[in-house]
Image (tube, rainbow, N blue to C red; front, side, top):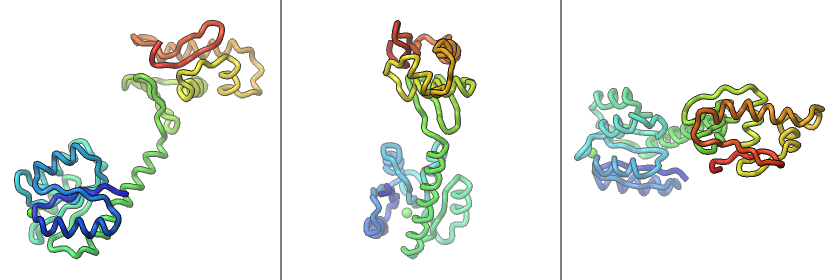
Length: 231
Ligand code: CA
């Protein structure tokens, strides 16, 4: 199910679009002027916006400019007047994904919507491949890209430190003993003693907690370690 916002002041056209899109299985909402469109854009979550250019209160071009100021992801297809080359050019320059000129053939518009939504899906799944973020407090770790940051500041970790922190984050709020940590991070075939865990916890703490008011990695005396947001 995809959420599509139809922004069109001509009620007849808006109604036609609603019927056709709902028949295709899309979830549809409608705005009838620029101000309402802007409010609905900000309050909702949309996969695609069908945006008429000629609108009362705020033009489609202005809405597009505002959307693209910090949202490159939402698909926008402009509905432009047939003779307005200027709108098409400035629309594409401002980051519209596509445009359809009025009067349009509904089949062509539907095909363009399908293409835009396919592109959005591809972009979303490649964003997923970039990895999921594990987080606690202001600490974030991405297992796909190996990025680590706290309060937006990047933290450099060695591969072993990274594995250790990832393990603590995946099991946050659970107290982990040294043997568990050793098995998970170094593997069972590591024939060292468990002191190596204490050593690496110290390294990671230095990078993750030092200089921050709130510590995330805590020692549980006689047991092991726990990563949690609250002491
Ligand atoms: Ca219009």
